[in-house]
Image (tube, rainbow, N blue to C red; front, side):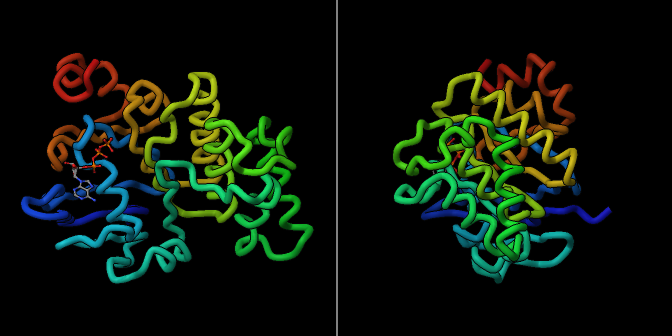
Length: 239
Ligand code: ATP
């Protein structure tokens, strides 16, 4: 089967030695992959190279077999490769409702379709429904992360890249976010590459875990196997 997302021979560096060296990774359609590893392992760099934010020195990024390496961030997003960056990008001067309608603009033509799509997002993220008239900057960290994810999903991506969505959030909110990702992947076939320091949460919803260390893949196994492997956990995951 053609992978939904593939990076092949990816080499990325800022100055000096490469941060990622000849990296190869494939994610199958509808698969949720947890990208794990200590601080500085190269997780963010991999996501940024995949989405086009950081140009690689060598290698290719493929979406459903099509080579996107030469395309801009925007063109990759238009093809269905979307990144929700660390830091919860929402438009802080707009309300929750306006942010969501913006997210629905391209993929849900017509006001009725947009309204229905936004209503489904409120069903998925109930706390957002109570905050629909609040401005982005008035939201809590958890609400912002929900909004960023809800907005990204409204653009109907084929592959979603997520960088540390659980950062700074209460365990209850993390569980809710992870639950929505799992449900969406199962129901819509969304493919997810999820970089996380919160190993337990990420593995609890992932099909597979990939561990990076010093820019190389050191483990690639079913999530349940990784979660139950004490040697790996001690060596690379810090628990
Ligand atoms: P974290 O969880 O802390 O974000 P990470 O696994 O995502 O870690 P990266 O952020 O990809 O790791 O960083 C990998 C390496 O690249 C680190 O050594 C980091 O210092 C370096 N690095 C990252 N961004 C830059 C940059 N813009 N310029 C120079 N070096 C960078």
